[in-house]
Every structure is written in structure tokens, then in C-alpha cells.
Image (cartoon, rainbow, N blue to C red):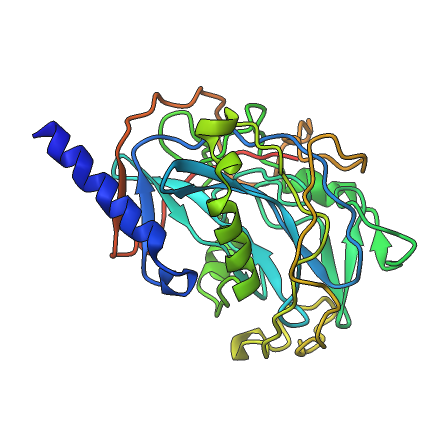
Length: 323
């Protein structure tokens, strides 16, 4: 009987892995064991204006957890911000919540991905009159090309959830414990855009790379980030986002096509740029109600599970952070 159940879950996981990226709407993935810790890596410098950083993360495929490299992505419209996906905890399973584009940063479990995503909000920059300004306190930028930069370390400290163990999931045993702030809750109910087709292609490329799987790399992927930006996909700003996203109250507009190419150069842990994705070890306590923990991750219980029903509308995850 146990062998039959294991075979059934394996077949189900395989069927989900064969679905095209466009068919993922309405499907969520849950797994019986925790994702590996987040690797520490160097962020490639931002090579052109109005790119948003999509931090690397662990996803789940036919052969277990695999690493999706961090990448620079053209914003689909002026004022758009990227809320990264995260692994949460629900009914004894680890459930993945997809990332999305919106006027404000929503809840991503308090997971500290680094590079401005310290667990609460985004400290890596802000929109100013249709142009994105980068906070070089946490973002690596090619300043010979990009001149809209500033330094604000206070906002970095305020948005940091302590995550010294580089934990990659929210809630559950050993997970990050951070409840959504009122701002994160409000952002979760705004109008969102899903990942662009080029982001989906990027994910599919990682899933097809056998070296990206934790079972093959021991939780230490070699291709942690890509240097070349993903190709652009422009959209009109959602109606609810008009006038709400950009700093100064400027009305978001569709961006012109980017010169970025769909290909991506592979990055390695040995890259030279100075900004690292280490969990932020700031001593200043973040200004939110959180109770970070540093428990070790639970022992794996091998069965992946998938369902066509979405998780509860209000996830009850909890947070940590990484830089």
C-alpha cells in the first residue's frame, strides 16, 4: 500500500512538471519536506535602467527542488514592483506561492532573499517620475550607465527580518515567523500581473537543467544568477495601480520595449560585484511584529503533493531575512 501511494504521488508530480508554464494558473505545489537553505551569492550589476531584480529561489520539479537563478527583469510598466514567490507552511506541507507584479510589494513570507528583499517590502529602490532609482546600499548597479541612484541604509534596516541560517521557507518547524504587515496585506489584495512569459521561460530553463537540482548539487547550485537581463514584455498598468505606484504620485505608463535579449549569461558564486545576497545581519530590529527563529529545518518526508485547488486566501506564514 505504501509503495502504491508513493508511485501515485510520483506520477502526479510528473504530470504537473509536463504542464506548460501558461497552464500553471490555478495550480499550486506542495511538498512534504523543506527546501534547502538559500545560497549566498553575488548580484550581477544592473546593466540598464528600469530593470527589477527577481531574486533566485528554490522551486520544485520532477527531480525535487531546483534553483531558479536570480535575474534582472524589465518592469512590464512604469511603477511596477516585483513581489517574489515563497514557500509557506500549510496543513503539514510546504506550499509554494507564486510571485507577481503590482504597484506595491506584497507579502513574501518574511524570507530574506537579499538585494533589497529583506523580508518586509523592498529597500532596493523606488520609482521617480517613470524612472526607477536604485538604492546602492543593497543593489549592485553599473553607474557608468545608470545615474538614478541613492543610498538609504535606514530603510534596509527597517525591512530586515533576521535570518542567519538562510532559511528558505516561512512558517512550520524551523521556518521564518513573520506575520503580514497592514501594508503587505493591502498589497496582496491589489490588482496583479503574473510573471512575464520570459520569466516563465527562465523558470522552465532552470527546471530542465539537471545541475540546478539540489539532489545533484548538494544545495549549492553553480548558476546562481544570470548577468544578461531577460527580454521585455510590456503591459498597460492595471487600473487600480494608476497613480499609486510611482513615487511622487506619477501615473504609471507602459514602458517602451527594452533592448534586453532573451538569452542569459550564467553567473557563478565567484563573481566579483560587491553586493552579496547574504542574510542581513543588521542589529537594528525591524519595525514589525515578528518573532524570528533560527531553528534547523525539519527532516524530509519524501512525498511531493500537488493539487488543483489554490491555498487559503490568507496564508499564515512567518518570516526571516537574507541579504
